[in-house]
Length: 343
Ligand SMILES: [Zn+2]
Image (tube, rainbow, N blue to C red):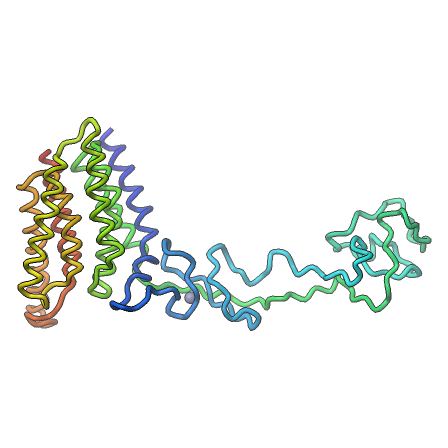
């Protein structure tokens, strides 16, 4: 049972992780800039979730704005541009053959896709066209273009698939490992399902923060509300081992703590960190104040250790800005493991 839960969580985490890179790329913009909707080479991006791999690169002059088709090389049209029947009174004519052409319709154009099958008993000799015979080509004017000459409307060009954004393998591995560890620590309990379900969103926030030192509001605020709501539901289920009341208090307390820090030193921390602290505080508070303190403290510890390492390696001064969201998340993750094993 326990192993199955861990495997299930890992599969979920890997799957979620594979959907994150494109979202991380699109969200990684400076404040007050619109979300990215094109790859670095200018191809439109299909949707928000998925791998950060563009399959665009069409050099077709007819379609310079060709979208990055996710379902294979779009260079070759599936259905070649049907040769427009020039005469609407003869739509089923498989070929514009003059009545005196001494060739049977079937053998004349074997590749005609829309034409009715030639009657096998049709003699090769020129037969007078019966008006009721469906296979007989209707007499058309000799100036009709031959439809068998296909000219592809889109020039076949090699698709230049190229990657952008964060690595899919690393993202999937991280998300899968986090989800598996949460499941291993907490076991098959309803609140663990909530934590596992929301963990990929935290990975996404960390990716964006690492890229642009920013935690977008459309992620942080819904995540806080979702965490509180889902834990409220989990608290009603049998097997829940935590307190929803403490979770709400923990969210308010951690958010307030980060707000104080932000007001004391606005340069040292972004306001996005304050909003992220809401959801992390809710999750940590579920297991009680001991876990809450541990998770909050470890976040600072991880961030301080990273900043110190940067200083020691000469890659940044004490004032160097570092993205703090990933360390907050890592601290909360460690706290959740402690809480899961202890509960
Ligand atoms: Zn592209």
